[in-house]
Image (cartoon, rainbow, N blue to C red; front, side, top):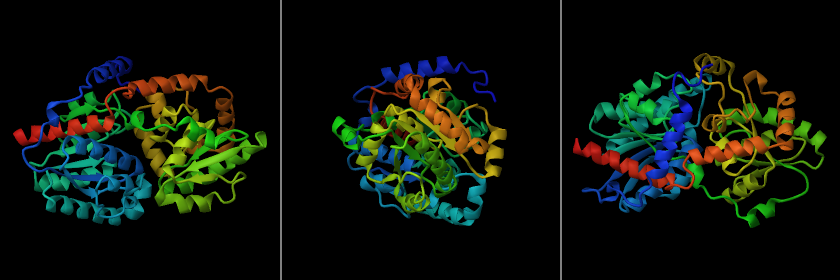
Length: 414
């Protein structure tokens, strides 16, 4: 594997982080009132995208109070005023082999969303993560309305695999909102404009001391986080359960908390019913926040959750498995030697990860024990990660809103 591909990543990250810290004005030209009513059509297909979309909508409403929204999103975006065309969970599929059985269903959803976007006569289309789905919708919309600005929130990880995606994306996307400080040069090189807007994890509320104390108890608290998609949970829950059994042998007073999301909560209950330690299954956001703050260590699926854990200073081990075909294809295309965002942003490799064939209880449990015994190296890397993602600056949702309005205004001037 090759991580940098000739780029000075350390200097690039430090430079971008410094620019971000200096670029946090209270007001900007983007806050000026738009000359006509603005409707945005937004698409989110994952819980992480729902969080991004909700923060963006809140920021936009701060800047343009009469803005209206249409599209697809989850409960957080709906709470900000979006009426979703259909349940967001319909789009929560990851992996080449996993998508194939739902191909025709997803294709139907793509056509439905594109038609709805066109009929809405939206000022701009904002697609949030889920690029394999969202960019297909964007292509249909762009073909019918070349003038409509298309903004994609979350730069695709072209620095990790399939670098050619940036050039393909530039055919239908005008502007990108990047979460990681080293991503804008990859996007601008492909012909799109791009702003680093900071990662929303740095602005999310943390548990109060009282909330944390309410979760306190005897014995270590393990956070089990087997993902938010049905396929992930089905594949990982048995492995995580076997890890829990091994940990209980060493820690008879072990406690397990398992935060989950609406779409898979029932499945999680079914798959964890026989665990050696019955997990506390959490759907309430306040309880989840308290569990993240109080946990001694976490076993988590690969993804954004590693940054949530870092924000809470919770040491972790990452474990992930997928269909063998998907794993084989991704490894052939990989440009990096780690999938954990804390490792990438901090430029360390302090978070152990067990992917594919290594996703086994006999390997994972000793790593959890080692991290539980000495989390100091991880805590230092987590602090660096939060600083580089924009901690202390303008809230990422508001910064993203500024960037969206700037992009729309630039499109209208063209």
